[in-house]
Each structure stands twice: as C-alpha cells, then as structure tokens.
Length: 465
Image 1 (cartoon, rainbow, N blue to C red):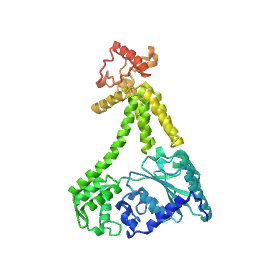
Image 2: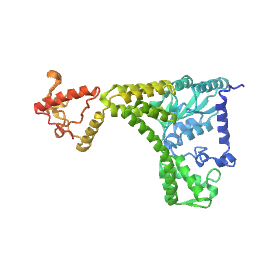
Image 3: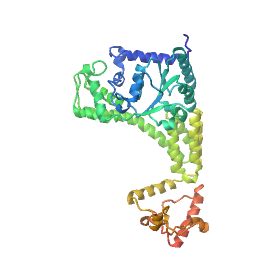
Image 4: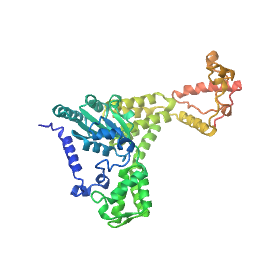
C-alpha cells in the first residue's frame, strides 16, 4: 500500500514508539542515555502508581482498555500525573493503529492527512486508529473541528492530554463526544513508591549502582517533586550522578542539588514573569508601542497566547475598569477571535486589544473598592441583612417584620431614598471613589449627587475605611 508522504512522519513516529516499547531491557545504547524518568515509564498496569480510582483493577476504564473497547477521552491533570503513560498503556492493549500527535507542531494540513489515513485504515481493516494528542488545549477551533466527524462516526479514537481545563480549551461539540478523566497530582506515598522502584530496578533504573538513600532523603525528594513523578525522578537521577556508584544520598546532598536546580528553574520562571510584568505595566503606563514590543517578545518565546489574553482580561477589570468598560468587551472578543483563528492570524486580535487598552483612560477604583468590601466581610463576618430589605414571601416573614419600611426607589424623585442598605455595623461605608476620567467621570458625578442627598437626609455618614 502506498502511503502519502504527509502521513509518513506520523507512522514513522508510531513505529519508533512501538520499537521502544518492545525493548524494556535497558540494554540498548539508546536506553542507557535516556533520562531516568523516561526509562522508568511504566510498561504495564502492574508498574503504574496512582490514579487508582480511574484505572485501578475493576474500574470501567481499566476494563475498557483491557478489552480494547476504549472510547475517545481526555486525560486532564497536572504535569507528571501519568497522562502520557496511560495513553501508552492503552496503546499496548489496542490492535489498531496508534499514532502520537503533537498539538504544538502540527498544522491543519497534518491533521487532515492523518484523519484521511485513519479513515482508509478503518475501511480496509475494520479496526480503529488511536490518535494520542499531547497538549490538546493548544489546538485551535479549526483543528479540533477536523476531528469531530471522525470521532462521531467512530473511525478514530481520540485520546487527548491537557493541563488546562477542557471546558475552556476544547470545543463543546468535540468535548461532548469525549469522556474527561481528571488525574490528581501524585501524593508523597505514591512518589516514594515510584522512587524506590527506580532505585531497585536493575534493568531500567539505578539498581546496578547500589545506591543507598536515607528515609528522610526519600521523603524530601517526594515532597520536592510537588506531585510530579518526572520531577522527582530527575532529582533522584541528579543525586545518583553526584554520589556515584555505591554512594549514599542524604538530605544535605539533596538540599544542595535541589537548590541549584531550583535556581535554574526559577530563572526561567523569572523571565516568564518579568515579561508579563513588563507588558502589564507598559499598558498601565499608556505606551502602546512598548506594549506591542513586550507582546511580541512573549509570543516569540512560545508563551501560550490564551495565557496572555487571561492577563489582559484581568488588566481590563483591574486597571481600566469603569473608566472604559468597552476594554473588557474588546479583550473578551480578542479571546474569541483567537479561539476561532488560532495562530498566527488570531494574534492580531490580541495586539489590537493591547493597543486599545494602552490608549484607554485608566482607573483602579473598582479594584480598590472591591478589596475594601472583601476586607469588611472578612473582618465582620456574616452580619444579618437589615429587615427592611429582606424579601417577605410568607405570612410568618411578614409578621416578623421582613420588608417593613422598605422604600421602593421608583416611587421617589430621581429614584433616591433615605433608607440604609448596609448592616447597622457598617452604615455609611464608602468603598468606591471613581476617578474623573473617561466614562467613570459620569459615575463620579452621580455619586456626588447621591452622597450629598444621603448626607442631607442624615441617613448616610460617610466612612471610607
């Protein structure tokens, strides 16, 4: 059978994948140089640790995998929780094609080519193709839509892995045809079992090195891994390389190694936060040109565009607020445009929102006001609702005074009344102080009249705590 050249990379990738699965001895040169986390990836459910409520013996998914009856699904969970490993275990149990697929590097053309191949395979063999998509949240709407009819007909089984909430990142039509399994971060007990197995395994692990480790050091690694098996095994491997064969890993050695590793990791993290901070503060400062530069820097570095959009939504609420409410609308529109177009076309919508917000009037009055209200709630607890603004749907409530004295605003001039809306303990509080800028200036004008009226009525003694 002649295979289109576009599909060949994926079939080749799948064949390489199966070749690696068949060599579990650790004897090949490739196995020797692979990271410990990759070598120790479970080859069967007997080796798989964690997620028992999802794939433990007798669970519906476990039975479906063992009987080669898996439907399209998504594994949603934090890094190192076993998403990719479960996909590989499914591959072991299937009798059809299994094709790993990267959402980061694949185009819509690649998607259509693989789906076409899968359709041909199903028609010729009656067997389905299992397509595993790592980071499925990075697929745009058009790419996801390409899978929909084939998932619906059952020609393919789509298995996605994501660290992002599928409700926000996967099309609702596709999501409705997939079962979502939520994987939890691994606890320290599970991580210690994984680490001990790596220390004792003489074929794929560190068993031949005869390394010893103290109990407190083992606990330290498990806690430092923060639920990520890959991170824990990497730290163990670094410690093993440091102490050498027959060496002893202690907590002091680990603290030194972990500190150096954390500094490297934090350096990368710091640059990430430096860039988003630069973008945020430049927009706040009103410089659209510099803001575009920082946006381009973030996108060029591989930052997730939707992460940037989430930060822009926050900015529109926190730093512009009611001075220009349209900023929030425009930013949400940019989110929808990017979902629809993907990269690179959708990035222009994000750039447009950045320019607009940099030039828009700024106000953090809403942010400050809400923070003050939250502080009062935390300080004063659950104060009772004043009787006159309670609803009274029953006779008993009316007899208890619910709604007594309530002043219906529409019956008063300018819809202003003298009644108090706060609990007695907070009467007169003023949280919101609008700025005289943009559309918020009109709100400031209204509040001056409102507060002057309340003050004149003797019912509102201002406090700005």
